[in-house]
Image (cartoon, rainbow, N blue to C red; front, top):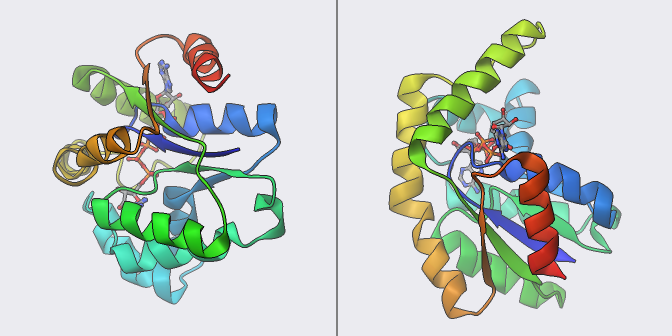
Length: 192
Ligand code: AP5
């Protein structure tokens, strides 16, 4: 099973991808997590990405395309994978199509989570509160200014992907406003 999760920041892509990894026994490939790990390890990619991520902007297509292409080749992706947060621009989607073709792989579905914008801000605020309460480190892009920018980037560059995948017949839209378990059940239903 090879899936893509599409949706704005806070839509629940990461939450649902994690739940489905257990269900299908395939890894979650979160470009956000991979980039945050590169930043923490101060790799060359991490150093290039940090300021862009902190500002809520998108990292260059070239960087993320290369990260994803390498990651898909890892042995744990042999049975499939869930892309969480990639592709995020039309050029990334075109690069992914080419990448999968070159590797002889096919995408099974693109799941888009639809969520009201007002709920997204509340979810980000909840995540910050929960992280602080647990003594963790708050994401450097989980603040009002960076979040506003992340939403703008989504509207301008990522939202057009719905049309892209609708035209290939791979898009499945799910209501992301329901509670977590109900969203998971709906995703499983559309994949069945
Ligand atoms: P990334 O880490 O991908 O962040 P994001 O897309 O902004 O998404 P989030 O992680 O905030 O939200 P999510 O949809 O995963 O929701 P979650 O499940 O966490 O990217 C960060 C940055 O990295 C980007 O801004 C960019 O700079 C860079 N980047 C990454 N990929 C890139 C790419 N391909 N190209 C270029 N740059 C890239 O849920 C959010 C909260 O809501 C949680 O607290 C959760 O518990 C809660 N929640 C989830 N579901 C529900 C529900 N149904 N009801 C109530 N609460 C819920």
